[in-house]
Length: 444
Image 1 (spheres, rainbow, N blue to C red):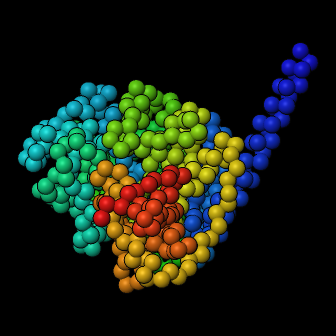
Image 2 (image 1 turned 90 degrees about the horizontal axis):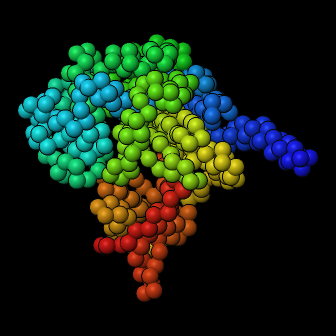
Image 3 (image 1 turned 90 degrees about the vertical axis):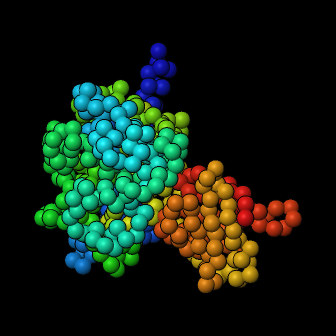
């Protein structure tokens, strides 16, 4: 019995020490990322209802040196999608719609709308063209209000990328249509529905949609790069709409996190459906992953001047929220590092990568196309003496040499290593990102 009591006290002291040192470790980690210019914003870290860190880093307004804090208000871009998803699931629970309803039920003249279901829209398997892939969308009035019909007209008559249900391709357009469906079913504006059904019941009093019109000393200025040399324009909420228009704080998002355990917003059965991976591990407004043997549900958000991530581990009620107003590149890596600390793992503090010069003749050897997965191609190009990479369906970015065959990106925390075969020729690469090691065979 005495041995059992001693063991109990040893366990208790160990847990107590962990809880006391964890906030210090978290702050040290975040401060290292801030020093490296990889984070500028607000963070909240919690587990099982205990908040270990809620703090701001860097500045919400550079010109006035006004610091971020735990109450700073940020835009969260595509994290909006999980709120849109929740409203859709509420409506299904109330038998006001079905996830198997066809799009044509709500927009009768939508091309091939009789083949596209609400579930296809939720899971990015509709094949509908992603309207934000068109650079003219932002160049021609992203700051000006648009009607729902005008917004939908920007992608309505584009050909489908693939037959509905066959593949995954991230489409903001699908969530625009979900917002439209919500308005049709509810008979009132999407923004009003989300306020009434989610924000108000959860007392998310610092959350809303029209960031341009927001008058608050807590409002952050968004910047287009970690250098904060240029502030970003504010996209009108009617343009990002149900795909990306919400603004909020880490504290309000934590209220959302806690509510998901209670059934106050949607039932646990609906929530489990939302957390079920379909194509490419995407559910209903959530990405599904795993770490340390536990399921992770998370989603990022990007809108001019802001990046955001909410990273949840339902099994142990972990919640990690990072909101950034300088479009810093490492949010996914920071969230993964925080989760590692929460799981008792040691984490190496980030170090600044140093760029070296590499002969153009060596760089030319790396140019080509590399297949990372079926249909996912990384194209490496040599342009004006510099290497760039471009993934299928994504933008093109410069990569920088750390070694002759090892390159890193500055826009995101990712590295690329080029490998030679037995014949001495470059025949594959390895992409390192978010703790993943992804090989790619050279196909051209």
